[in-house]
Image (tube, rainbow, N blue to C red):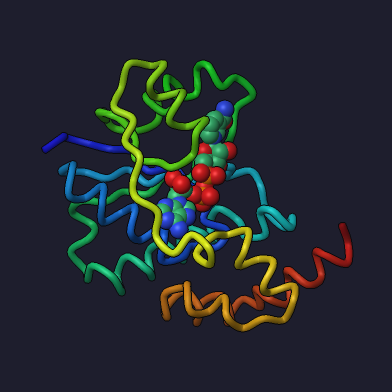
Length: 175
Ligand code: NAD
């Protein structure tokens, strides 16, 4: 069992694939550090939600999936991107508690952690044909309610409460 693993993501929006990555990481480390990446981004088609909204969404989904005890093993950090990939892992080391490596399917993230001499663990894919932020955002634009089957119930309720589908449609008109 490792001491700590980082799980970076944009969570635009959070879906069942992300929850599978969290469960996979929790089997391998005592502590999980979820990085809400690209924290400076919001109100764009690729990154419609703010970092704060993504944190609320994560807290609701973790509570639904793992119960109230998740706080003892998981921490959430909003982190802005930097223009220097080579030192991104060192930047995370400055902002997070000590960690052994990362769990990610993102090739750049895996490459940067390997380069830094840390663990770079690739999780298995889960329903990738539908559980993907890109596909969910596209389905919303097409008016296809199928996206809801991939998103935890508490997150669907939250997204409805902040007018998420309406936001995406408006952003598409703007861009
Ligand atoms: P994402 O929300 O698309 O995915 C998060 C994680 O979930 C990834 O590991 C992805 O592989 C996994 N995943 C998604 N769908 C899945 C499924 N169906 N089954 C299993 N796993 C699934 O987020 P992302 O784009 O990977 O986030 C990386 C973040 O790190 C971004 O914010 C990026 O900007 C940031 N980053 C920043 C720098 C820098 O600042 N220089 C460098 C590298 C990465």
